[in-house]
Image 1 (tube, rainbow, N blue to C red):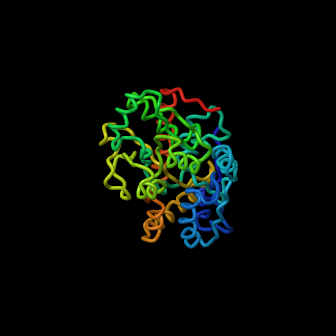
Image 2: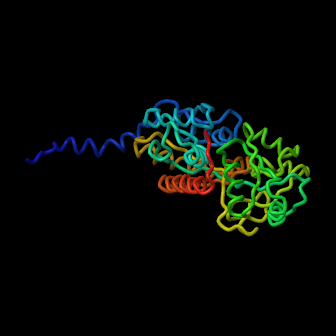
Image 3: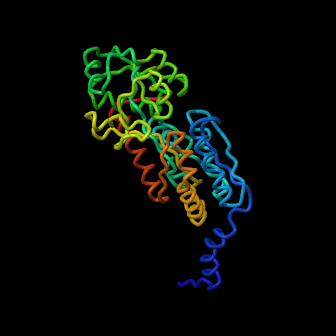
Length: 321
């Protein structure tokens, strides 16, 4: 039996997306973050929110929902209405390491979100306390092999990107640095500069002042290219470990099912904002490079991050309760 669909129904369906794009937004938009106010996630969101507010003609409100390693805010974003009025500033934890290390999360990093755009990224830096008699990655590895089980490394907590970076080094270099988890990045950094831990992976902007003051010794960056803020530092690949790549990144998502026209609009306006010199300068001041790209490219990036960390977790046997 053949069912005929009225012509006006087909026309109405075709008109939905353009109408949505033309009328959106008609009220303020909120950007949920899964970290606390003052965090890097918050700072990057604020760099962007003012420009997007101007472009969209509506206020953008940043709402922090920290807790449970980022799961609280991420779940809230995943369960929000898919109408374009709730966005989420994802990062390498919420959509990279967390899905890999936690057996049960209240959200699906892939299925529960519509990627919009990758905004910014920065490398981590392999850093040692100055009391450690090493100046290069090669010397660190040699010392760790000479003193197996004696050297330790700090992290922001079990399952954090800092933790996974340390285990990746252990696996690739064939050494055994002992993991010391802290409750957050600030106490972990304090542990490093005070000498409680010997080694840590930390972001460029976070470690730079301590490197300048001599309270920390930087050895290598974790990206394929050298970092503009520390151009003298070799990459981990240059130090003898090709394929060692870990970044801190941020990107905008919307709840799954958000109309494609809205995703396209926000992507376009964010792309324009990232091209502005003052936005680039503000991100640079925070230690980040503007990235950009299409929603599909960001989706591929997220899947790649989750897959890569999942393989690492399986290979190293990392477990987090």
